[in-house]
Image (cartoon, rainbow, N blue to C red):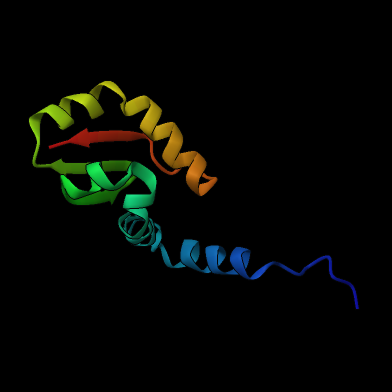
Length: 96
């Protein structure tokens, strides 16, 4: 039996999610679930909401100082998140 048409389970799930146009919902759920791993406990504890839509990550914070710090490092954060997931899913970050 030839395996040239076989896909890994991860590839099959991604293809299904792409076909169903669930990417934003899936990516938002993934980012929320992994948020503390991505940014660390201190930032996660000061995050009130994380939303993702069409490549834009919207982060709501309860600290103006932290908001300013993340604003200054948003390009690094985009690169880190994309590396974390192995995909160029985050194009922009907006802070609230």
